[in-house]
Image 1: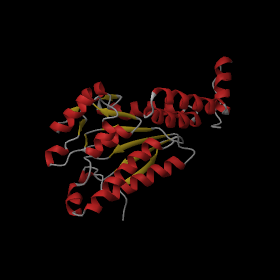
Image 2: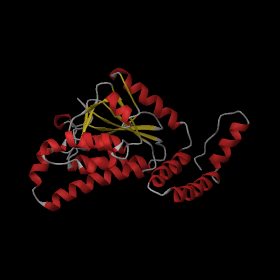
Image 3: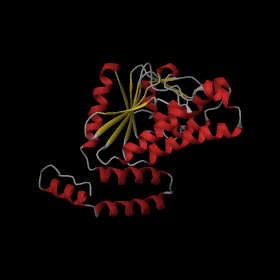
Image 4: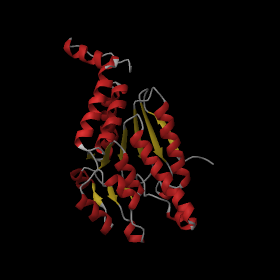
Length: 259
């Protein structure tokens, strides 16, 4: 079967994953989830790639699960398989070695909104909309709320979940769901600017830091300090940390070895 998930190389250090099934508004069907998981794993294992951009083709980012497919599943084990696969993808994005940037236009609804929240950074067009609208169809957005509730405050999250109403890009930025928003024609340029800045850093340092960031969030304060002190020590023993400090003191650009 032809895949709707495309990998586009932007330059040697940056690659884009594109969900390209505009007829279903880039739905997160079994097939698309499975192919997204494969694409993320492939780029995560590619030592040349330092930053991954995730985007949707056509009218918008993603409307979430394919409801025609969902209606046809009928059996408990099939539903569980679908939601577990979706969760596996979200965990891959968070636990992967490379920073992932969501580039959003149009709608990011339900599991599509979950996808945005799971990415390390997110930027959108000014007209983008974000929603967890499951309540409108009798299916509470329970898995999407795991990712979104870790990015925004509880009252705002409950309002989105209980009303099903979409929020605009400016409010999504205010809540912390996205980093920023831009006019549609500027979005690509601005996202690439950020991606290039991140790609210029040591990817070993970023890998250590990304892992530490998400792990310490789940720990009590004392444990978090003990864990991050260990991680900083591991980081300090790397060649890149020594090179970076030397470059700073010698007022020159660092020459990263990613070791």
